[in-house]
Amino acid sequence: MPALIFDCDGVLADTERDGHRPAFNQTFAEFGVPVSWSVEEYAEKLRIGGGKERMASLLTPEFVRANGLPEDPDGQRELLAAWHKRKTALYTELVGRLPGRPGIARIVDEALAAGWELACASTSAEPSVRAVLEHVVGPERSRRFLVLAGDIVPAKKPDPSIYVLARERLGVGPQDAIVVEDSRNGLLAAVGAGLRCVVTVSGYTRDEDFSEAALVVTSLGDAGEPAAVIANRSAAEPGELVTLADLQAILTDHKEGT
Image (cartoon, rainbow, N blue to C red; front, top):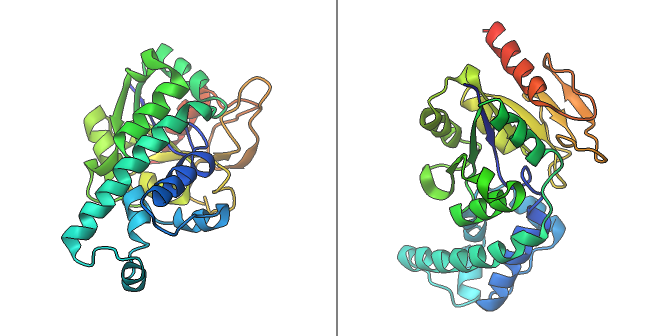
């Protein structure tokens, strides 16, 4: 059967601005680190894949010396682990306040009814990913997902490793799986794994280059919250809703084009 693979942050819910960012900032405050990322500053940090990696970007020699932080590699690894553990806990507490993006629960129901395999593949921490997934689709549906998250692969997106692993774990070929992403890094990871990708732009990513995407939309759409097509390079013909039939058309087009 075909497989539908979701990214988490920005896809299941628009989590970055009002979820991850305040959790990072509260963590810094609790640890006495003089950093508070603004909306604009965090947009730049999102170019770095992975939460620990974003935190690590602070640890320049000048910043470390000025704030009395460990200078040795082992000390910095321990510090980042402590920061990230606390940040993950704070973020998990915030998840319940963030609405799911339009169309996610609907398309999951359609996919389950049709017998599709489901997965969520993210380089965010696994507890964070599972919390968002359960919040957005519900506990029962979330148990039907293969979840691949955190440091399960050695390299973050745009490296394709997470999606190569998802294909292997699901037991599907590249022509039988489609990815929903929201960022250029995620799109490049999906395409690098040989997968077709639908992009639902989010608040931080709407101006990025999605030239390689099969379909780019504002969201998957729900009643009262219609999707708008930004770019379509596929055989899909979405209206106000992106449906499972549209995703199947993209996969069919992919097979016929190879």
